[in-house]
Image (cartoon, rainbow, N blue to C red):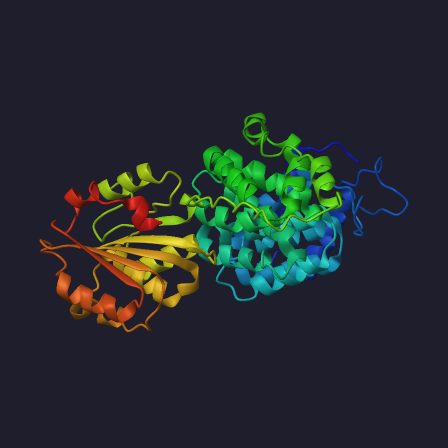
Length: 456
């Protein structure tokens, strides 16, 4: 392999980009360029990449990087031609050409209807770890940044409970999003990660390690809380076994936090009790009744939906967050439809949500609960904007039996109590109404109400 002259390399890559619109000519000049930089000291008789079934030119990474730099702008400006060239590169079947094909997919707008079919087909075909990683990270760059909701929908498909063989793909795809500093999707990602960690398949130990470490770097407190919650409540014995195996790769502070929960139980005592034969039976003495322990509320499944002109830093939002650390208090903007679109990815497909909706947020919580009743364990409505005159189009819903508490002030001059009560009684068959001597914001009543009992 000749020494890499950067000026010559740039010139070669620039000339190669001139054939972007002519796939056959492009491939001809690409082969010549890759062959020019072959590292013969590494080339084997089989000329196959280690751990792969792909042929390889043993091309130095700097060569591919320069080619990608020259193709970036022209590919983004001409996505149709980029997709055609990506197909041609993929069919060539070499490690380097497939890495370039994955790069070109990442330059194509996520709205392009042929993008996902290509990605799905190629990830199913490939065994090479480098190409797989590129397909699930580089190829999804624009979708991840420009249409995160579409990206998360794709990841949910990878992480579907019935398709465990694609879970590794879903985890691999999530890692770049978790690492991005501006990421606002962590609540949704934590929701998707929880069932994977609890299932803890031994075949995914390395992937789970990468996922947990990435989550810890993004939010140490939330990751620690999640893992403690899983370890304290799981009924799956493999959860502790797998997490114990991979814990040495966790950051030291996380290892320390989980040490007690990951200690091995004393199996000797368990087996002795199970195997010891009973020589006699005492009928006269009844067995002591087990002590019933009150199940601790999972604060990570409580979400507060603020009002129309409010946000996550409002007085009620802060007070709830202080009372129930770890609960979700997101910001919503735009129209009702836009806010609903922002809410759904946060809640995902997870169940047992306790939704607290204030005013306009109460309307959001009502619509979501009526449309997805199996996901909601309890709905708390604070002076909700259930006004038929204003929001009739959203209130044409079927009644549900989700336990619901309506809290309204007699002095509310923003949302009249009477029509709201009428709508609530029609929609919720398991409804409790609490009337307080207060205004729309419920400032006085907030400190007087027993929120643990209301939410419990």
